[in-house]
Image (tube, rainbow, N blue to C red):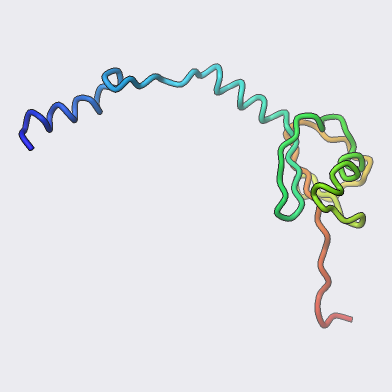
Length: 109
């Protein structure tokens, strides 16, 4: 490869305008981040999804409505940010709700 071709290739990479590069819209990125902050993340086992319609709902309501879809057992415990909560706990945007069922321990009396 000639030196001219090598220099021409490096100029295109160094100059973003020559490659048609357009900087991302910061306003759009902030709107997406703000939207994500208002969603509630629900997890049970391998099931995980973000919901924007759960803000203001109770854990019990969410558990009941997602029981079939997420295969949540009726005796599963609810954790919000790693802390156990009751069915009457009201969810806010940005929270992580996880349903867990403690497994038995083999050999313990």
